[in-house]
Length: 503
Image 1 (cartoon, rainbow, N blue to C red):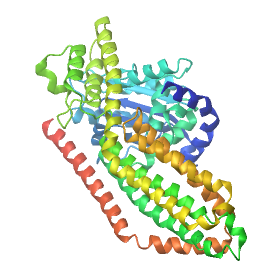
Image 2 (tube, rainbow, N blue to C red):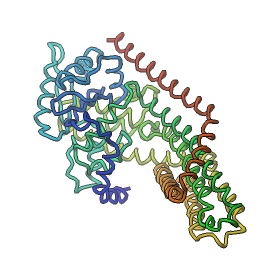
Image 3 (cartoon, rainbow, N blue to C red):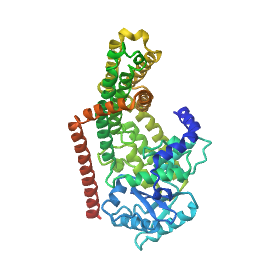
Image 4 (cartoon, helix red, strand yellow):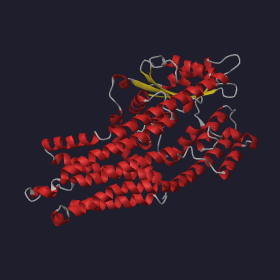
């Protein structure tokens, strides 16, 4: 893993600029983004701010953050100090800030003097104190952030990125527009653009469950559309087989449609598997075993009767639930050598647990063997069809035809090895999908160069005809999105009402 990160860092500076440009929409608002401000109370709220200190976007970075701002008047357009004041007051009103949790973590990453804005934010936070509640701003970072930051520095000792900028890089990577390995090499302005654009597009009700459901629904529908569009190329180029005698130049391109379908169809099927697996098998939400839990309890020094405080809403103890507890617990304690020892011990244990959990998840990829085999068979069936239909002219085909077939067989072998739970199986599956998509795009570009405008028109008509038959798939897709939206809004509304009633 370390070697992979090192390689990515070496090329990241070259590709960072183009990635950031793709991620940004080039609007006037995005061009003015100057600062990233984060409040970590649990809830965690992130803002992007313009050069006039006006809020451009606001985002609940965790579920409690979404609960807090759900249904509230928009903070966009307000002075960031007023927005921070409002968020802190909401946190008090809904019981997130109380005598047991009176510290607000603050962070600012900016193109200009971040320290000056940070000082203003801290002053606003602490000014919200009352006679009964003394609120303190803290810039040291949450336990979870510090663990990630320290692990990153160990793997990349030459990196000089600050903790605040690392947090911005994390936020950028969580948008899906850029990897963390690339994000840590980009300048602040590019990351601000990425984050602000994503935050503005994000639905206010977009809980983690909603995003997971949407990802799976998108993958399933995109697979159906991909199959319909791929079939158009396969059909078009298949017609050339019978015309080779009168059009001998077709021998150089007759296999294009089948080769494209082979790679594109397999990649689309595997993307559904990946999206589904990621929804179910998450490192942070994977239930820990008793041995792991005992080590964590010992490191925290808590009694067995307080174990329930480590559980999530499903009654499980996970890396995520441990970090949520640690974030709140450690920041509200007076710093001491003993506390530091606890923090270091817990971080070390969670680092080990994370490796163990990843290994367990890699093995569980075998649970998706049927779906993976089905996706690979889509391509293999096209391999068989191509070899059969072109057997009479195979000796006259360009050598690249066989190269494409051999490369697919190699890719298929690697994909099928994932089922065995090889180390890094989940991550490897995404890499293999990217390889397949790369090959599909390569042949797609060749087809675009080969086709006349009349050919393209014919293929487009076939595509539209095929896609028009996807009414059932489209209905399922639309219903899945509506269901996910309703469930997310009901969850946020009920959680907010519950906090209001128990306050």
